[in-house]
Length: 255
Length: 281
Image (cartoon, rainbow over all chains, first blue to last red; front, side, top):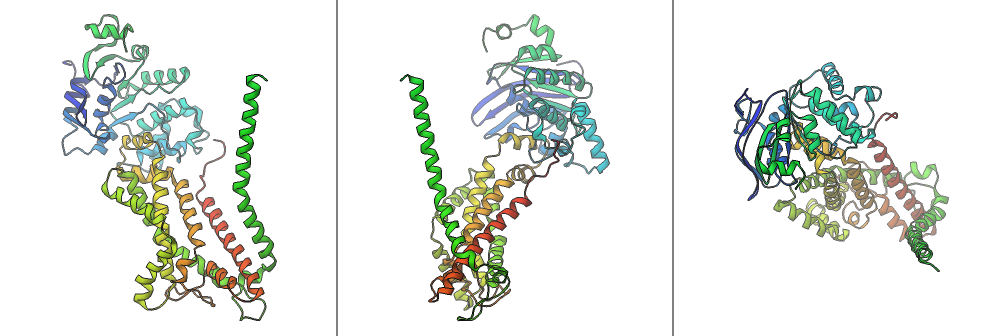
């Protein structure tokens, strides 16, 4: 991607599980304040690619990479980079809502604030409230911040996870099929959320759902069998894809 | 008879069988409790909990020395055994592929099947024989050795039940591995670990054989871990094999006290680890 310097980018990134290569030689950049969708059939490597960006991939059994991942131009895989600090700058939301069951709603959102630099109690409270507003959950939970997070509905839990992820103010937010386990209403609320969140964050979302990619993203990248087949502005990719495989996938001929 | 009616009948028959199995499984427990209450409750009174034994032939006296003794011996056993067992369990769950984990699981399973009297002899050889006197501490060590493998295995199994996604969520927030383990994974499974520990405590609190060679038993109230000490199971044993009918009564009553002590311990531990959330959730 030639135009403005991407917030986060990969250079010839390959990601492996032991001897199996899941992502092959992908160079891709993501501009700030945009929503980027990664689409492709199951097992195409899009999730593995996503997990390589915040070094979660290396925690999977046998996970390793070659190539580089640049956050603001700096390689995040150099030995001087602490993966824990990296993950505070590149947050992640998962497929299934994962509130911490022993923590209250408040403590869940505050969880990411307990690591890293020290914050005063007032600062934490203020940040939690701002994050819950940001995740469009504040009005629903403001009267029961001390209740168990497990009392929330699935969609609310996922928005709680979004609040937890944005509370430490990362630069990039990775979402790994965040609506796969939600009902249509929950899905819609998350999608609306992405629209407001991109004002502050750089967003990369993996999705199975092509309509979702078309609805929420500014750019879309199509992965197939570990290769990056095509990337471009979402509208263009969905209306006049350059590659035949992309067209076959988006018109539903396979996948 | 049509098919669905036949199915309903078969279903009812099977449910009946399960119900019977439940009754048969619970029956021994009820019988034990019933017998203990029937034979022991008559000798129970406040003095029984607050007095120490009187010489044979006199009436009255209690088992305060043994209640204190059991609490102290089991308490020290917990101090030694629970951190070791829980720590080893966390290690096994965190490093499932390690050779040490494999060895730990194997040794724990073997130790779990080892008769407790063997552990008593072991503690006698290493502590009592070398110190040349019996001590409550040796009893605690023997009980701790019995607790460790039980606690290790249940802790590991409980931690494995925590979904992997929860661990990933914490790591993705920038948590370190040990912090993820302790403040998310172990914290989530704490009620399970407590249950496992309670089972271990309840089991060793009733152990008699390992204490015979170690804590030995005593007629006096003692707080000195370096000296012989009374324990409820030892008192039950001594009274039960004694020649007097009155002693047999005391044995029943003491056994009832032992069960009560275990019950109170369990209830207290459960109360202490109950999740604390406000109600409007």
